Image (tube, rainbow, N blue to C red; front, side, top):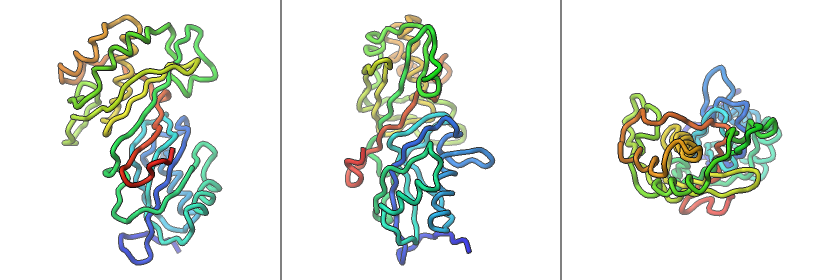
Length: 264
């Protein structure tokens, strides 16, 4: 008989999972009916392991086609399996493109979303006039050479506390503030890739993809190095003309003050 785990201290444990996935075949992390999602696959694997129908909570949502090396998700369970055994069991039932790397027992009140102090994303680009058959699902293939030095100069304007309204999609009925803090923004190269690294408190829907699309505009020579700064100062939507595709985006790590400090 199926069991739904309800909040309560007796016999309930809470586990945090560190998850790696190839998002190519999924409509993002968050569960959606009738389409494959990472959350849906994870919850099905938990059910097959524990016989409990459980809703998991992720530290950060990822878009359709985006990937993760260090997503964190948590769930409550009555299972007595150790974290190590839970990892093995879940990976047995999960498809090959989703892997639970580690599991940790955490306090019941700990919230992997609200208690996160930063999230780190990397965005992979490949500037190639010929394109790429191998990397098209895992990097943004830009069909011309990019001026990385100009993009590096432009991205320095991102660091700090800003209103990122100009870099997000319509929030709809959400009343969430568009103010976010970026702690770090830089480029590095790992041949053949140009990689944009950004660390922030949290990010708005499509924020990073809009940022990368704008930086690529600079890299193509179609905007000057003040382009990012000007979008921030304008503080309104509709300025962004190019959003980078999701396939180059990777959630690398979510950091906490007291838990999972060295999980990566």
